[in-house]
Image 1: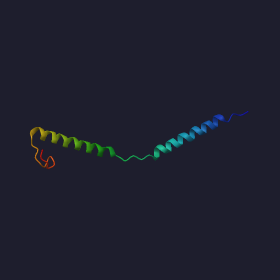
Image 2: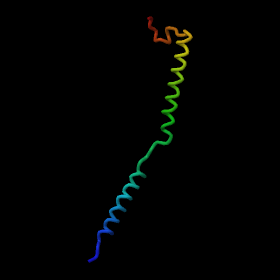
Image 3: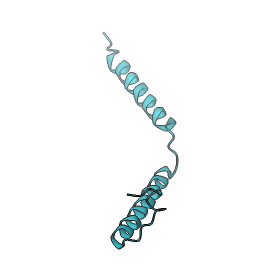
Image 4: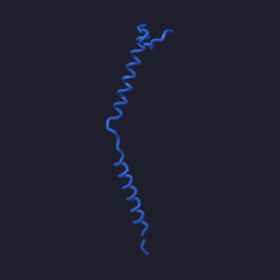
Length: 70
């Protein structure tokens, strides 16, 4: 009696590995997309620092607070 189980099992594993490899290759990531997010976050930090500095120095006028009087 010849066992076919090892060959069949090996073919199934090979198929699953090939399917996985093709799936990984099919994924497309935009290059350097994270850099835009980092630049946006850095700009927000800079604006926040400038606003905090103006608040401490008392340099805010009506235009900086949206034109409302408190």
